[in-house]
View (tube, rainbow, N blue to C red):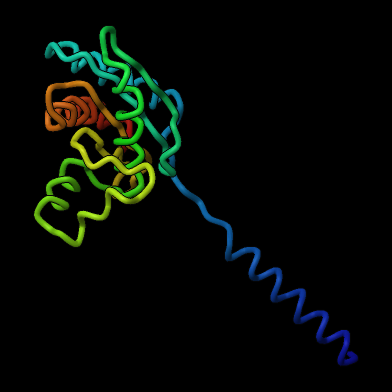
Length: 162
């Protein structure tokens, strides 16, 4: 084997190995489940007298499903999406993030991240320990109440994500 042939073989093997190392397998929420959760979340809030919008995003924070309840304000559309994006991106409930930012001056600059909304109502959707999406709710008379609607729906549908 010549030196050039050996060098070409080593290069080919190195490139082949690198290609295999870059393949990832990630879990994500399905469109059908996202639509189910969005509708159920709006219904849960309506049962409490709250007119809300609910957005469900995938693990990357991209919108998968949206439902705007009757009489929900126009601001609830973007607020619900931003809460869902923030929760999926940080893999944490936005209510906890907001409370942390209020207590910790070093975390207060989280609001400078484009698209982040540190208000309660964003809740991650988990399959086991993996975040596969998030629900964002806006329109109840407090972010904690938005979060309660999402939490209740996730608890009712826990069997979907086992």
